[in-house]
Image 1: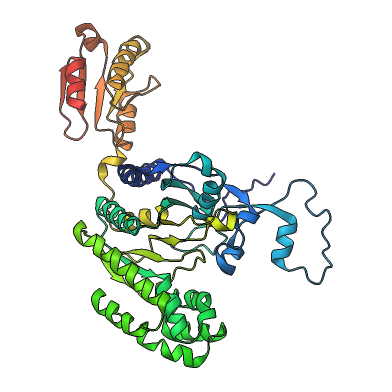
Image 2 (image 1 turned 90 degrees about the vertical axis):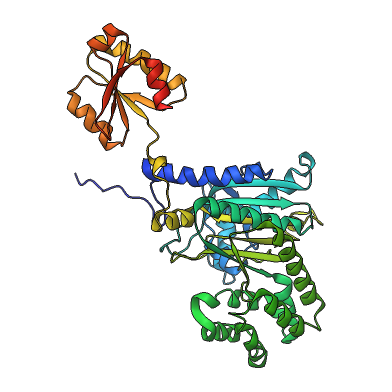
Length: 454
């Protein structure tokens, strides 16, 4: 019989205990900062109705949605010979549900569905996996975790400033030096206006968002493919040359460029206000106005953010922005929100590349009780219960095997102490504590051992 070697789908991963302890360090650090800023946890289902997800992320997002075939005879009533049957149309016939693409659209659905149970402004955090049918590559997976924080039901720009402060606290806690790029969709709308292509703002954003990936020449070529005329693209040239200038210089140039665009001027006013709020925050994070930052998601209407690590070759590790109309799609109008998402996988890869994971997180077990014999086992178990009751992580080797094997077990798990509870210790009502790093050992009372381990 041929045995097929087991495998997992491309773009997904198993996590070993070491990897999980490191991931939990990431989640716990981010969660503690969310909690400090008064964000409340929620969770939503892994799958949503396709009607909830489709049309919210642009054409690329719709294409990358994982769709779930209907139960039973999913082909019933579908005319495969219909000449107007596109791939997306066929998908809606065969599939009613899909795996969530991000946490923001499900959050908007959640707010609309539970609006009578919530107090607004509502501040929530959510840390769950999302799925995208993308091509797997470094830093890009088909299943990955996002850690989101959102404030909905308030138009105040204090909220944008708070998200910048949270970002600074998170990456300072991790020891990652980052630059946070900021822009405003209203500025992009203003640019589309002044170059004479107001209806092309979405295509403009999609193309400009790729500037750091494919370069100016390719971006201009894509704009032409998307129907933006050559003369309009020519007017964009000064914007491509904004790099290297200070934020104040960029705002001054934008004020001149967008002098005839009301929406553009509103965007400049908003970004100026946010920068004014953060002046008092003493941030370690570098803030940079980036006019080419567009973020591909269609639902952003105001501020947009993107965070990159300075010392690691990685794409954005965090991003977000203001959305005014997302709940309106589900019937709840005038409910503006702003949020940011931190990519756990990319943060993990950066911490790993820069060797920034604390060594202590890999040694959660403080002590191993040696199991000498059935007679000594009860005495060891009694000590183990007392140590655990004191809040110390400890275990006993479950089998009566040679001490060398038990010591090797402790070494392989980097357990710093072993506790011996043999006949001599049992008779003296003591335990022998051995430091696995120095090799030193001493006979102590259980209270003394607990004190040393704490």
